[in-house]
Length: 292
Image 1 (tube, helix red, strand yellow):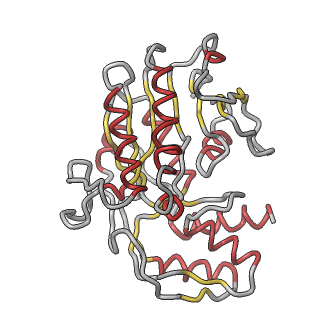
Image 2 (cartoon, rainbow, N blue to C red; image 1 turned 90 degrees about the horizontal axis):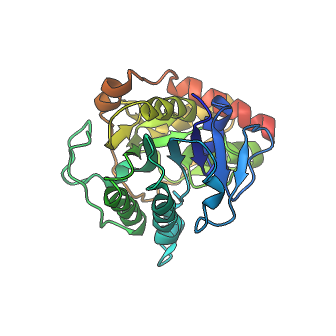
């Protein structure tokens, strides 16, 4: 990796992991980086004016600006558009003139049609973008990418459930549970029945950087290719923390059983995840405990 790669959105869940792992990547964005990240950072107050990048030599972009807070997005009329679509459109409007080798952005495996999917789910399976505002905003993001397909060679990473250490308060299952385990006496989870594909952030970061070097364009699933229940995640975190997690047995959205087919990314890059679920959860817990 060299400094000809820039990353928008380095203060979220995944950005700090990529920047810490690849110190030559240049951060670009409005928010300051976490204090432990030492990468070069270029402050951009407004995506409507990216002229500060005119003199910067780069040819690859990782675009992480957006929101995965589907609970909130689904209760507000335009939050999905404002956070997931408009920033992407503004960035690509500028980047279309830069002759990039690769642009990578991120949507979700929730786009796949629950009623038609066959496990494991590959990139050719049908999507259903009209389930809720969050999924619709991710679909619109993919349409923006297609609009610029002739000028910006892009990969759309469709994420499974990613997890890892974070100082942010987010809706993601694992960081939320760990924050609660470290801060509260009583810890709850909505439902332990769903089966998901959980990918550790460090593995995700490696996969993304490898994708930058490929000639591929279009959607790519990113997960582990295996599925585990939320109950298994809870069991491991209970053992690590020594605390009990109470199952509230609430209704939850999304597929009750999901597994990514990751044969495409394996074929493109040779990548495969290195961390087991137990290892990833242990590393996440230890890092977040240090931050408390």
